[in-house]
Length: 108
Image 1 (cartoon, rainbow, N blue to C red):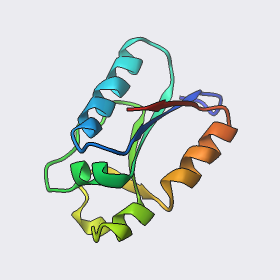
Image 2 (cartoon, helix red, strand yellow):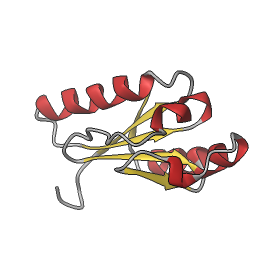
Image 3 (cartoon, rainbow, N blue to C red):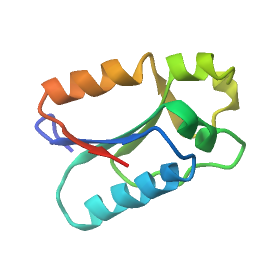
């Protein structure tokens, strides 16, 4: 991917099961040959879908990030996040920055 690659934000906030739906959607975007970079940003109750020890099967050119603010509010230590999951300081701020840079936004 080059620096001009378009970005798609898949925002997951409600249901922990929606994390897998977002990962499936990311895989579908790449299978469609759109050449996009996908960021799955998770906050709210859906954060529970990112905890545990099982690795997340992250599709190519996809990043999964948990909201640090939400983790703190829910008493989830970042060390409880599954392998391959990163963090962003704030889901809202990360999404706004991406949208201001012309990223596509999809709420899962």
